[in-house]
Image 1 (cartoon, rainbow, N blue to C red):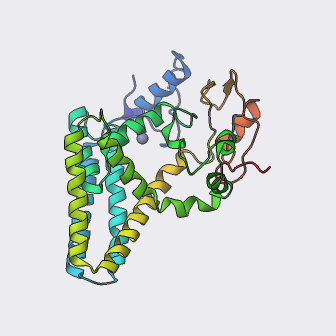
Image 2 (image 1 turned 60 degrees about the horizontal axis):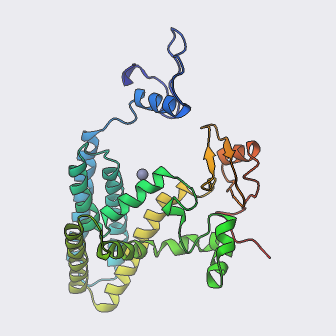
Image 3 (image 1 turned 120 degrees about the vertical axis):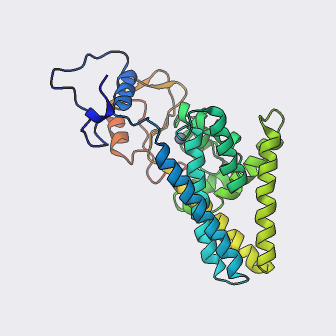
Amino acid sequence: MRSSRAVTAAPWQLPRPAATGPEPRRGSEYAQLSRLIRQAGLLERRPRYYVWKIALTLAALAAGWTAFVLLGNSWWQLAVAAFLAAMFTQLGFLGHDAGHRQIFGSRRASYVLGILLGNLGIGLSYGWWVEKHHRHHAHPNQEGADPDIDISVFAFSPAQARAGAGLTRLAFRFQAYLFFPMLLLEAISLHVASIRALISPGSRHRAAEALLLAAHIGCYLTVVLLVLSPVKAVAFILVQQGLFGLYLGSSFAPNHKGMAVLTRTTAVTSFTGRLSPRATSGAARLPTSRSAASTTRSSTTFSRPCPGLICAAPRR
Ligand SMILES: [Zn+2]
């Protein structure tokens, strides 16, 4: 096996075979790709990077809250709210990396860091989110299996769009325009989903996670209400949580926007974009990227393009 030092290709290029001759092709296409990625060192942990990133993020977060207390009852606190929204999102990114065990190899250490960052730091249940996120990675953009495209306010396929009724159907029709405004509510939605997950029976580590989440909410509201007048406190919370949701949601949305949506009966058979239509009906794709366009050419299944940001409800 070649070491990562021997790889000279740019980060976005897979390494070429050695000059001594092409490497034998062993295993599935996925196995070959996985091997190349490991050989390039792309899955190696970078402890020094995370030590610095965690330290600087926590220092910036502390600086933000210190500025909040020192500034007092002022409308300038809305600027602090924007800064803290960015820092909350950065904590969320670190929680994501802990969930993928990019920071610690140990599952326990990753979990402890995750609940400190997620539950205590930003008021989101780390255990609930990681479980959901792993289901997303196991079945990316697959209808009925990827929880990230099972959102009541957005349709990702013609089938989901057709299932909408009343206000939901209206929202689907204009979702390309409503997308960013609705992301302002994303943080509130995640807080509510976290609390619902923790009070539901069968939740793992419920006591520790609930305690830390309650501590976050209690401390956050206490500090905000002690420093600001009621009107400014409401404005601060709306701006801080709104921008937090907008930043976080905008970061994860590109995993889905413009990507092909698979049904349970559609299998990806090639990393070059070929799809195997085993028995599909009403499947949809979202052709806003070059890879998705190549999918259209090679598949008879994904034949209903959905124009716009994400698939809109069909007109009657
Ligand atoms: Zn991930």
